[in-house]
Image (tube, rainbow, N blue to C red):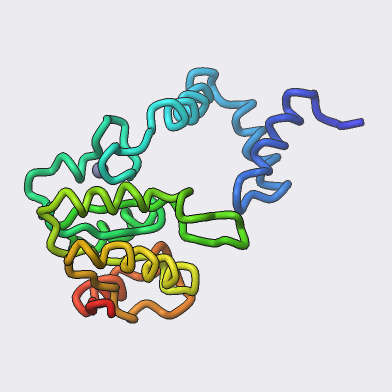
Length: 200
Ligand SMILES: [Zn+2]
């Protein structure tokens, strides 16, 4: 038997599934919603609904977008001859915050991890290869995470891109090995971008 009503219990349970939210916080958030003006509370419901229904993947780079192509791919000031390859949309955000990026991206949707059941075919690697094959690309920057899975993914992709005769670089080791792009500081990322080195 729960001391809460069924619907309140459900809300606490759902909040409790969010990262970093413990039972106490889940309870506090739920009572906040319960007391809030209906219109105010429904804004949260609508925001959740909107991100689930409106956000899709850019058909060129697979970054998050509410249109067919994302704002970065649509930006005429971007250098489309440089493609920066990242694992997740969050990495694009981290790199963009440095203000040092004038290129376009390619979001893989993860890294190759056979033990976790993630094969190359589960990522957007084939889309990247055909993007590069279309020509007009002079550099591909591997900005996958500096850990084993990220390094392995970068090497796999660079072997596929070898016949395309394009310059392939990897972010410099300013970011601690085993760390992730997402949590690296802006300064570290900027250094890693400037110091990027040619692969193989
Ligand atoms: Zn895009």
